[in-house]
Length: 154
Image (cartoon, rainbow, N blue to C red; front, side, top):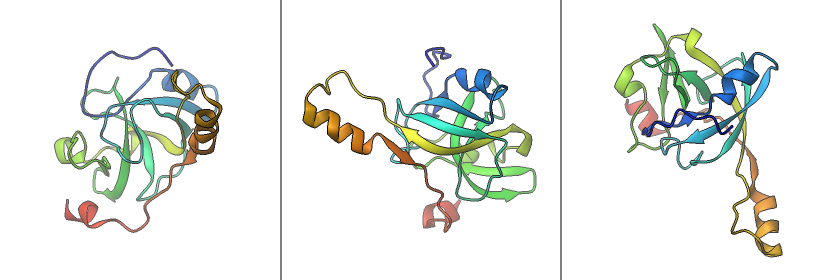
């Protein structure tokens, strides 16, 4: 997962490990960089992705950027429109979603995110810190079935 493009972007970029594991298994791992899915996902989070999964509105998905297809991004699928999926980041201030590049063709959607895992930080050495981390490190990434006002407004 250390193989990153090195680009700094407002969009969560995923490590290229995602592409290598996709061909082998229906599930794979990805690493988030960037703030556009805060508070759902944070920079450094690891994701469990199911490739080829059926996408529904509200799901967090991994897709290829429509204009830069070597860049993988993670966004929330809002609705299926003519031409593909309308996707948004959970952080309204970060940008880098369908408000910038329009709908994303379905063939660019790679998979659905099921779980996020936050790695143990080096400064979490005490027993208390490790127990706290263990209780909160892995969480399911939930779908938002009823779109919020912000999602409907766009």
